[in-house]
Image (cartoon, rainbow, N blue to C red):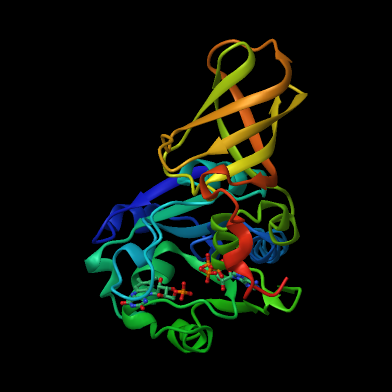
Length: 289
Ligand SMILES: Cc1cc2nc3c(=O)[nH]c(=O)nc-3n(C[C@H](O)[C@H](O)[C@H](O)COP(=O)(O)O)c2cc1C
Ligand SMILES: Nc1ncnc2c1ncn2[C@@H]1O[C@H](COP(=O)(O)OP(=O)(O)OP(=O)(O)O)[C@@H](O)[C@H]1O
């Protein structure tokens, strides 16, 4: 998979070198089941039309620039992890548009001309609620109008589970309140972090990308996977803990050494000792699950 970074203004050399493609559009944090559906649909079209499969994502999250709602500064899938998942899903080209104040101000029709037609998009695929362009005025209906017949548009309908939209916001809500065991329903797997393991024996440290979105403070049952081996343990997140280091106590001695690549899966919330007799999940009673 080729990764192409796009600054503002988009360079004509990038546009000139672009190959005809089917483009999936969205931020795609977590690459959850809804996102996977978008990419699968785009891949089926790309295979049928014999075109490259491209994804256009943004970095950082638009909320860090647009003055509305909470800012997303930490990610379920930091950019390199997202890239790896896209590659596994068969994506050929990953366009990463640097999102800044200037990009936020691009009107929807100009975005279509410069970033979609300009990048040789033959078919655009996105979800029912995709928004693009200044003030989010570009909707999927608008995208068909803005395309002016230059490319086809496929809108993927809402994927729901337990009567809720499968979404990155919902996943962040679950994780930030310790409900890691609910994540599987929406992500299609447990919440995972990739990292480098250090330490022998029963106490290990896993160095992770500080951009990861951490669960709320508490002790969690985790599974550490490496080279086909799996080890269970407990990871404690506390308000004082470093955001790039997970301290894990394994139930059995590990044979690993330094800088081994591992995956940490968040299985279950156990307890939050910092909150004493309060349960961290108590303030999530309003989430219907
Ligand atoms: C080029 C471009 C410019 C955008 N500018 C804005 C903007 O000025 N204001 C806005 O609310 N959304 C803008 N958006 C849409 C946001 O990316 C985002 O989809 C929107 O805020 C809705 O986010 P939500 O689905 O998380 O609520 C823009 C999107 C693109 C691709
Ligand atoms: N449940 C879903 N059903 C169908 N399409 C979806 C679903 N979730 C996301 N999409 C689509 O996937 C693409 C990427 O989604 P994006 O990351 O922008 O939003 P999201 O996951 O819904 O996050 P949020 O919860 O913050 O709105 C967009 O085209 C969006 O419309």
